[in-house]
Length: 88
Image (cartoon, rainbow, N blue to C red; front, side):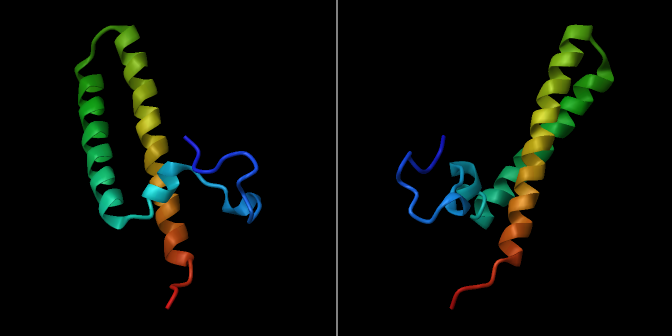
């Protein structure tokens, strides 16, 4: 879901963002999300190690890739917030 509507962007494309990106600026939320992602990644890897059907393995691989992608976005937002100058 986008946080701006068509024609409602006075600052231009640089101010455009997703709701998730805005929520990731909250350090408490990010910490909680990172813990959840790490728990889910470990759980999926354990299921994959145990074996199972090929379809189940492939489905879990797709879910795992999604969690890893979310983890990358979270880290990137964290780095961007660290580089932004603090307002007084």
